[in-house]
Length: 282
Image 1 (cartoon, rainbow, N blue to C red):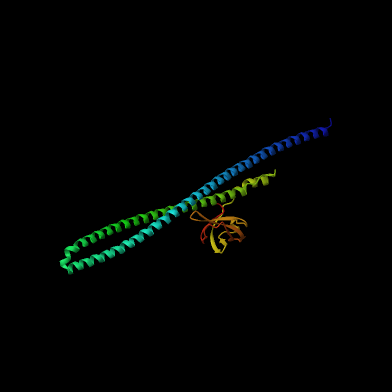
Image 2: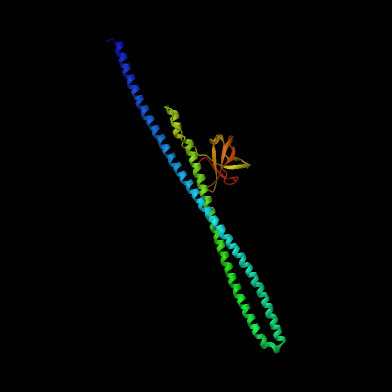
């Protein structure tokens, strides 16, 4: 066997070992990426299921609130009708009381003027006074009933306000959850390349850079923020606007300068104000 043949055999041996090593490394790396992708898919499925559960809860709460609202409206209408009737009765009794008072005055004047007929008129005067006392008692009773109905009406109005606040809170939680799910879905990109560069980029895209600034100007549906390209802002980025940890709206960046950026308002829950906090993370 010649020296050249031996050299070729040695080179082939090293090349085979090298190729085997590369194959093992590739298989291990691909498996890790596949596991990471499957894990992300599992997390996404869990979030989607949780979102469906919240949506069902919101629908059920909305239905219950609607039923409670209709029931309270019916009770309020009934109480208002009762209140109007009682007020009318009270007016009638007050008018009758005034008539009785006038009658008492007339009878008293007649008794003073005609002393000889005092004995005969005394019975009428006593009866009139009794009727007056009965009317006064009825007036007090009706006034008490009116106060109770008014108090019940106030309680029903408070329950309705509480139900509306609960509905608003559930809708805000749903919007917040949908934004969180939307952020996750954008970052779930499957690994289709075997090269290290794109694979690493696909995994790391789930952790966006956190940028924070403030609203500096507002003009219709446009807003300007206090950070720009020097801070890492790029076109297409979405900033969340908050006031005291309450979600206000989103700003989608359309123009970027060195120190400031501008964009359009989206998902507006309330009108933003100058000085509100903006951030790429919620």
